[in-house]
Amino acid sequence: MILYAGQRIFRNFEKYCFSMVVFPNAKINLGLNIVGRRADGYHNIETVMYPVGWCDVLEIVPAKGGNTTLTVTGRGVDCPPEKNLVMKAYRLLREQADIPDVDIYLRKIIPDGAGLGGGSADASFTLMCLNGLFNLNLSTLQLTAMASRIGADCPFFIHNRPMLATGIGTDFTPIDLDMSGYTIAIVKPQASVPTAKAYSGVIPRPSTLDLRESLMPEPAHWNGIVKNDFETTVFPAYPEIRDVKAKLQQAGAEYVSMSGSGSAVYGIFRGDILSEKLKRDFPGHDIFTGNM
Image 1 (tube, rainbow, N blue to C red):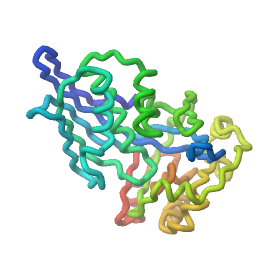
Image 2: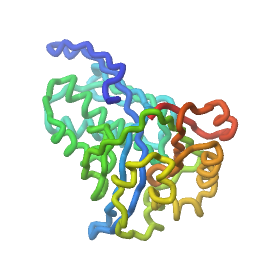
Image 3: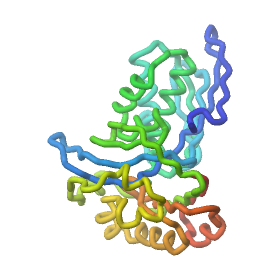
Image 4: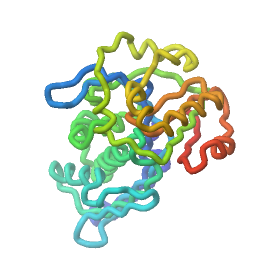
């Protein structure tokens, strides 16, 4: 579980003296089938979400002033702090519990607009941090319900383990998927794909395969079977994303796919990855490599 890797906690609840540092991680989509359009305008999907080790850094400390603040460093985010999902998570939890003002520091490392769920992870980790810091004793079910009010991907990060996601992506079923022995390379080109634009071109179709069963064989057998429906519309509009997929296949990945609605593309490799070679192959791109 990635949730509290490397955490620091110092608590004195009488004086609200505390500090917590956690590392919100990204996710990838193993297959993504858009199976129907709903009356409310959303789409029903079927996908397996899988946590990966590309992480932001989130720290929560006592407020120096009289208000809660959010300071974002690292990768630029095209969003004012007050509209950031982290602040939305804080305000939502404060509606439910009497918690003090805090200063939140977020160092962005996961690229936005990539289909990796970085902003959603930050929000969900904020909920979990505040729950732990102030002994609110909210259950996983309660935290998941709150996360679903923030964004569609947010509930996944409360569980933060391989999950089959259905409905609008918020109905979860745990899935046992052993990816030990595999490594992953994620490449994010400069292009970003607006989610609304990605959905505007898709044609929903009922799934004809059981995604969980399709993922049981090794990744080399997923090709042509485990698909991301967004690729059919995103690739023609963003050929640079299609080119990333082709280059990862040429680099020897056993399985390659776009994550979410893009623009990040991941390749699953058997054994080690030559990260320096990947950097040469993808100049100007954001790259992550690590174990699955």
